[in-house]
Amino acid sequence: MFRYQALKTKCRITLSGEMTIYTAAEQKEKICEVLDDPRDLEINLSGVNEIDSAGIQILMLAKKSRARKQHKLTLVEHSQDVLDALETLGLVPYFGDPVVISDN
Image (cartoon, rainbow, N blue to C red; front, side):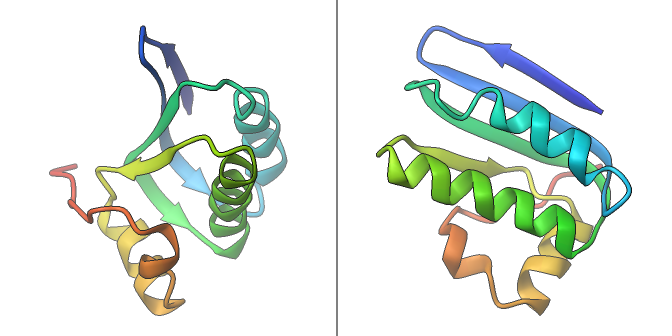
């Protein structure tokens, strides 16, 4: 699931369910629609219960795209599945976000 909120000073995307090869195309399209917004972007990952390399690639694409435009992107409330994938791939430092595991 994808939920988008535009707030005064930032935008928030909340993702839940799978971030896998089976959902990647749809998620990429939705995330790319908001990458040009100059407000800070926060992606809440607390509801992500499965992630594979396709899901990680979407997050990397978002991070790279935002950095290229000098716009901020922060991943927040990592689920244990997301954290495990980022640690396994050695990507926690790439994103540089404080790692706070959600209660979900």
